[in-house]
Length: 326
Ligand code: ADP
Image 1 (tube, rainbow, N blue to C red):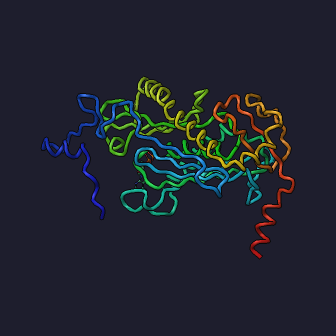
Image 2 (cartoon, helix red, strand yellow):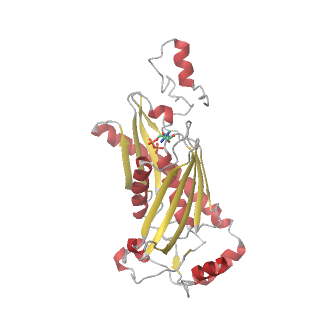
């Protein structure tokens, strides 16, 4: 069995000879991993990492490592799941068996089902679903390594992958965890901090421009006053994550091959869609075409131009694939 690394917390409690009292934040305001109370773990985001997917993203958030692939909007199978008024979002969160210290049962459990459901619903708030009736947007999320905060890491990465797929959105979705350990309000809890005796762990995701909350989950108990303070801490710090998402998208567009950008040019002359208009005003006729995101400025979500492109023969892709198999 793998021996767990000794943390500063373990070392401190051993030195003092008292196992019962652990120091989560020291007198200088430093946490067990050396961070201040408002410091996030290091975040690295790269978009467009999987050429076979319509959109993709790799994200590291401290020890957490997650990979997201997006396919769609595409035909819904099984067909009875299709909604004639809008696209459906199918978000699949999975933790790899090797992503935790002890081997995890690879069979999806209730936790994964729950996280998939709430995360998919959060993204639905950001995507212009009404533009793609009778289609599915499939989002596959794999946790490769974990140390608390994976649902937020995954949702943050998934929003980047959806944007990378060129799917029109009102805004990105950006998440953060805030909480309490040993009476201190802290940002971005790691696994040790989640295990504090009085721990509160609150996962929040926003549409970062409007600060609309699209996901809110909490472990532990807090007062109304503490909740308000934690929410403010979350709002203050989520900007840091949003900036990293935008940077990743910008780099992804800049790295696109010239022929891809050239291929997109035919779509760029169409009139821009109005992102602020009411969704119900959009044409709701069935569309199965792909969506191109104008590469010029995909980060200012209020102003970005998107164009929708219908396939001339939407079945061509399937026919070509089937022909190749015969
Ligand atoms: P989140 O990862 O969003 O914080 P939880 O609070 O449920 O979600 O989980 C906290 C951490 O516990 C995870 O990041 C992971 O490191 C660990 N964990 C979750 N599920 C398992 C499991 N089945 N086996 C071992 N460790 C797990």
